[in-house]
Length: 328
Ligand code: KG4
Ligand code: ZN
Image (cartoon, rainbow, N blue to C red; front, side):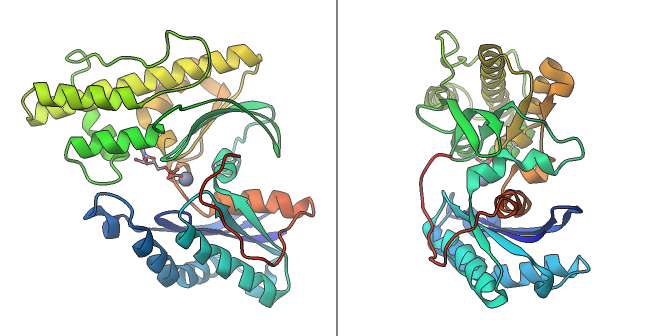
């Protein structure tokens, strides 16, 4: 079954061609970072307009990387939410219209379900059951995944998502939006001993997270010290170390509480090298990551999940529906 995947939930236009037998055949991502950077965050209307400009060329691009054309497709998967409604509507309209024109089924995919299964696109995919750590710009969750479609939320952030905390702290340090990757690069030069940030909620039982206090701690440290390059790197380091230790400890707890041994990491913050190596140190071959480009938003993960639905005979009706918020 040959599937076209479309992702337009935020500021990345992603497309992919996935085949149930052959695996991922092609994918392309266009990131709008430059458009939004001057505003310090995503401007929804500009995001929608740019998706309109990029979506058709990117669909042509991925098909041209394969030996297939539109008429060979057996189905279409597009992100249905959560995300920016205007941006989502672009992918949903194009996906639905193509499916109508080609008389093939289409299915709307939950963005976080896409992230959840991005590691399935790798050579050594995880087997069920596993614990998933979903860490993106809008979500921080620990989920027990028993099988496809069978998810139990074990814990989540009670305030900021971890990616959001990265982005806000990066902004404080004068880095470009979205600052997660830049903050991580800066942290590499930081002194781990200069500042010690708290490890939020580790002293309490349970699997929930809280990151807004860490952000405040970064602001206070920043105000109290000279705002030189060295201090900024040291703050980045202290912030990242606190996040990584908190996430790693909660993952360990979740595995212990459920008796499961496999951990799957997903979402943009999953691209963070410090987090990846700390989890590898703890779990060696029992931790699974998507390649870094599939941690952040992409069409390949949407095509993969859509393909599982369509193989199971599940597709969406003709209505073009999207939603801005909502858990798995
Ligand atoms: O999953 P994603 O691409 O979009 C959402 O669904 O939200 O995640 C984006 C988030 C941003 O907050 C970004 O700063 C963060 O992932 N991020 C990182 C890194 N790369 C992206 N955070 C820390 N370290 C990174 N290397
Ligand atoms: Zn995402």
